[in-house]
Structures are given as C-alpha cells and as structure tokens.
Length: 562
Image (cartoon, rainbow, N blue to C red; front, top):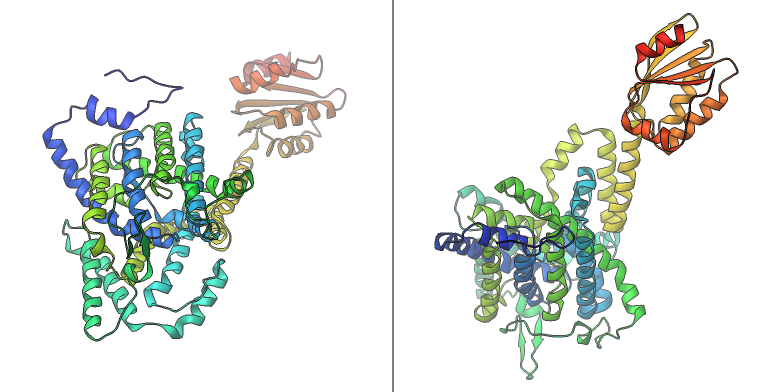
C-alpha cells in the first residue's frame, strides 16, 4: 500500500506499517489480544488512581484510557505505545482541577491537544534530542517526589481539611496531621505496597497490580469484620446520571458525548467560556503539551530500543494531539504514552497498535461490568499503586549513577531541575534546566578551543587553532594571540581544526586584524569549508602587507620566506 506524506508526515503510520505493510494474521491478533488484556489489567487501577491524584473522580481516568487510548493507537506513529493518564501529569492537572474544576481541566486538555498537533505539523518530532539527560532525570525525579508526597494522606488515612498547594506547606500540613493516622488504612497500604515490591521476584506473568489490589481489599474485608471502616472509592466519590440516578463510586455507563465547557467549573457552575478564561488556561495547556511531547517521544525511543522498530516522531505528536482533542468531549483528561504500560505491552508479546486498542476496549468493558466492584477498592491501596509508580518514575538507579559518575555540570543541572520541579513548577524547571545546561555546555566547548604552538623563530610565530571560533571562545583566543605575538612580525594561523566560525568569531577576527600594528602580518591557512564560506560572505579579502590566505601551511611558509 502506498502511503501519502503531508509535509513529510505520514498519517496513521504505525497502524499502516504494522497491520498492512506487515501482513496481519490470526496468530498476531492472538498475541495482540493477550498483550492488550495484560496491559488493560494494569491500566484499569492505574487510570483510576491517577484520576483521583489529579483531583477528579476515578471514572474520568477510565474514560481517558479508553477514548484517548483508541484514538492515539489508530492515529499515532509508534506501534507499541499505550496511551492514557500518566503520573507525570498529576503535578500539572491537580492545581488546574482545583482552580478551574473539571470543565477547566478538560478545556486545558483540548488546548494541549491543539498545541501537540501544531508541534507535529511543524515537525518538532526531534524535540527529545535537544533535552539533556540531566534535565529529563531532574524533572521526572522531582515529579516522582511530588506524587509520592501527595499519596501520604491516603496511604496513612490522615485527616486533613485542606491540603496546601505548595510543597513546603504540604509537607508541614502532613506532619501536623500525623496524629490522625488510621491503622486500618496504613495496614492496607503496607500490604498492597509489599506485594507490589516483591511480586516481580516470583517471575509470574500475571501483573502485580491485580494480586496487590486483591490483597488490599481482603485486608479491608477483615477490618470490616471488626467494624473498622476505611476510605474507599465508593465512600469518597459519587455520581449523578442524566436520568436522576444517584450512586456511589463509578457510574456503570460508557463515556458520553459532552461539551467540556458545559461541565462544572471550580465554583460548581458551568464554565463561562471567554478569552480571559482561555488565557488563564493557556500556560497549563502549554505545559501539558510540552510534557506530553517529551514523554510520548521518550517512550517511543525506549520502545524502539526494545523492539528494533522505528517510530515516526511527527506522526506520534499528531496522534497524541488528536487523542487529547477528542478525549475531553467524552470526559477524558490529559493523556500521553505511558512508558511502564508500553514496556509491559512489548514484554507481553504485542505486535501492533491493535494491542493498545484491545486494552482500551477492556477498560470500556470494565466500566460496564466491574463498576460496582471497583467502587470497593480502598484508597490506601490506590495510594500504594501510585507510590510504586512514583518510585519507578524516579529512576533512582540512574540518578545515583549520575551523581557518582557524571560531570559536576550535569549533577548541578539535575539537582536544580529536581528542586525547581518540587518547589515551583515543571515548566520553570525544564526551561531553567535547558538554559543552564546549554550555557554550561557552551562553556565546556569554549574551553576546548585553544592555541597550539607549532614553531617560533626568526620573528615568525606559527600557531594551530584547535576548536570552534564561536562567540564564547573567539574573544579569549584572539586576546591570547595578541599577547603571544607581541614580539613577532609574522603570525601564521593554521585553521584545519576550526570547524565553525560564527558571527562572534568573525567580529573578533576583524578587531584583531584592525589592532595589528603597522608592519606586522597575519597569514591564515588550511581553512575548512564553513569558516571559508563565512569569510567569503563577510567579503574579507587579503590586505597587502597585513593579511594573507593560503591553502596549506607549507605553501604559506614558502611564500612568507620568499
């Protein structure tokens, strides 16, 4: 099948490549079905837990996994990515849901989808290559710390009337609430967490999420025999259907088409859609889009390494955007590719995006069949799930390795990004991290540019310039050259190791030429193409008795000796 490109982008590339160009068979469908069911079992509790952590009822997490999961799987550029709500978004979504309500959160999700589509059409798919590892580790570790802190309340069953917005205030409030610790919630949380930790060591193919939740629920049942109630999804959340039906927990219905701005805002009233409202939501929407782009592309790169297949980065961004545009009209919050679920998808034997579609269909089935049962899940067990997610997200082993082995500049960037993410905002952290990493990198490169003396006799100084002559290095190099050439009448510079000459380097060179005393000569040899092109564009020409250009160093020495 011939696939058409639009501005270098192949729509639906993952589905076409996996299911059409590679013949799709019944055997592959069976493998995808097994992988889809496996990931679905993992996704159902995680989707609910992440929705609760984001400040909205748990069913909206399931809607996200179902609707966005199908749309992104069909339209995206990665064969094996499984999309849905992810832990990384929690730190952005929670403040938005608290301030603007569910309506504001869905509108922000819609706007983030538009941003992602624009990024894809603008071919920003290589974005991930320009984000240093130290920045990525810094903000993901910071997010993990924030998520883990947010779960302390439900894990220990603490009684808190208000949870402060800022991290320091949140930690202080949690410490003050410690006397209200509930033994039942703590026991459920501890049992669930221990099973999540030790289950992988058994080597069974069944995901640990299911037995851990079952064990936590069993502990809740034992506590109920002793008349010790604990917080559950059903006790905290309720719903009201269009026909007036009221219930606790999760409504047993499929996602319904809705207009995001008709839902309750932060004040409980429908959102008044205006430019002022959109302007207030734009920063959060842009943050969601940036994080979604980074996480989805990072996930695709990881999966490429696991499978040997290649993703289409720009199509993946468009697919992620399409998912986040459509999902809010069915109650879905922000979605992106989930690295843990996608990796589980590959390990379970997935061969195409069909597995992600089956995972989404399983989530829809759970809504219809399991909704009453899901309402009995204890919140402490859900908090344990997110604590495990936060630990995996932190990539502590990579952080420790970087702290022990990496250059000091990278350590500084990572710690700064981590601190800024925890204390302020992820966008600030990434922005400052990239700027600081860039500056430190330029300093490192600038220090690599140096002068090497080849010979110095008979009033002639021959030097070799090693490294790029760009704005951060050129001024220092030519100042050093001015000092070293003070007692010589002829200066010969070999430029064979100068890959780049930028505007700053050109300016420094021109000022050096102007500063040369009368009777002193400068000869430049062995110029690579880029510096030669830069000098040609600047119309730098030889000056009789002052400035000369030669193809090679021996030619220059012979001409100057003549």
